[in-house]
Image (tube, rainbow, N blue to C red):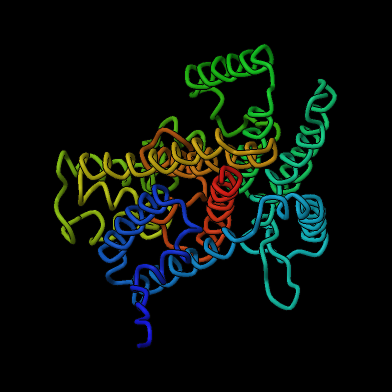
Length: 384
């Protein structure tokens, strides 16, 4: 009598494929995707295929995340220096031969038009994590100074383009690595206090420093206008203050439970500018209210905290620093976007992860989160 061979169930076939994902983080990301698709359907209702394209971009992001999750952290470490050098070289080439659009030189034509600064969003934390891994056990103040120089070089090139939003993301990712590497609080606290004092002085003297004849060093005129508009949007309600005012009106009008799906008046009467990209949070808060916004923030907090937990359990200095930086970079995306829409931060071009429309940002997020999945997986393999 021949033996009866039991056919594996569908779950048994699929389970090894899904094992590369961290289950808890994947659940949080799926919740963000569900929220993103829901509000994109409403906010992009009259934008043709924007909802379908957003779903396609999400699928692409998850594919990229799946592929990156297969790459061991050791291989990522070997890519750190070449990727950083390549990214900086492209930034220099952009400064010399870049494509200029609307006064900004951010793109490079290499047969196709690319934006090299996107590479540094990942290359920067990779490079600094590699540096501190190499200096493990013998860190001195000069090592932190070298890390600072490695960080400021690409940030300076991106600010020069100018692209303040991307510069903030690159700078914050690098600073997170330096912080997790053990930078002394004796150096951090004075800088934070100086920033608070400077901000308070700026608010108190807003009327004087925002005069047209006052020149701000290191900032371009449009960047000065953004800060001054944040301090008092009513000075130009139909111009530079329009974005902030309409965003705050939409968020406030949502109340506790919102106006309901597809019922946002500010959204569908097109008062909210960039309602499917940078200002999509205003459209979401209008339709789903404070409770909906709270749910979104809880989902972001869950993903960030899960990422920090993965970082705390990472087996090497490199993977721990990299995972921590990626997790807090996710926080930077969410905090800056919600802050600018709510009128507490200047308007910069930073999308809301998995909610805002955009293919490049989705691929970048997929790469970063795939690295987190890889680090979580490597921890599991070492424990076996």
